[in-house]
Image (cartoon, rainbow, N blue to C red; front, side, top):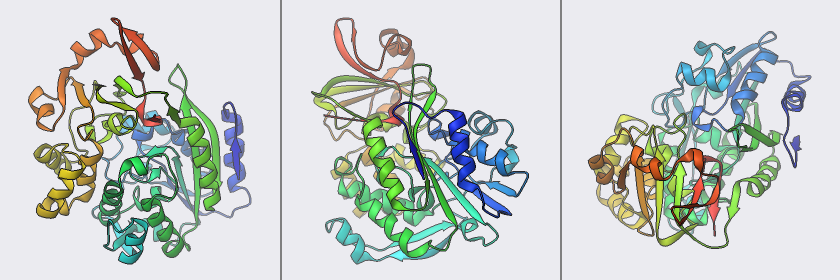
Length: 414
């Protein structure tokens, strides 16, 4: 089932749809797979809360955020995202290195075919072992469909194979997307990575009692999440419908390239360049040659989401696609951490435009050490004050700039 609106789906209508999706089901135990706090504008926190309160009296409800490689949700984040009435101890932590089991593999020949011959190695399909627990009558995967640098459009089976997946699929899928080129992927369905996920969905998890709950959202001037579409079920056609809605709501087509862009990273959501580089790759196709991207990053304190990824980013930096692909052939630590290698590609402008990170916590030496320009946050906001800027074109001291308050919710292209 799906509900779309030219306006906004209010909470009453949302709850009605949520309730209908589980009506008539005999449930003794369920597992909910929401995103983590880095997807705070997905509407998934509210939906998780609705399912929990609707079902907690009639069955056992487990909640396992689909972390992928992200750090576990903190208690403060849990309360802000899911609500204080969901006990923090209910949250199960997915460990992408230790908690997974292999359920199949994508043949090398299939990978070669979908990547136009760029990648010709098999991919192991690993998922959290809890998803194979036969005691669950229903597994509800909740998430937002939005343009994405690795798979084209986020969510649907990505929430299973990456969000609840293991290192092989995470590394291989990220590198497959990077090899193929994000400009050929972002904002589109049927990318090579999506085809890999479709293969895994069709061949390895049919017996899992899985139900997808997909949203398409925007925000308003008051920073409220607005849900424009909700799509519930298992069939791929629901995902395709949500892709069309997201392309309508979340993609901005500009008449000419941006010479100077200023992007704000919400301190509640962005604490690393691993996440914050959405500012780079979500604007990359809209930036002018020789332009400048200024990233206002008040709470970015590190590069990687975990210590090992942070170390590798600091060591190699954001070098661009060609150089990273060369290093993958010679450096074992990148060859064994392909998601990091892919991230180094995604976070680079490939020399097309300058990226200036404006931080409070990272030093000039640290920022420049990974290949970005540096400016202190306090210095930057004296000129580019987020509270005084509106999304879109602004004039600051006689100069035209393009301001984006939330790179996580869109894709900007020419």
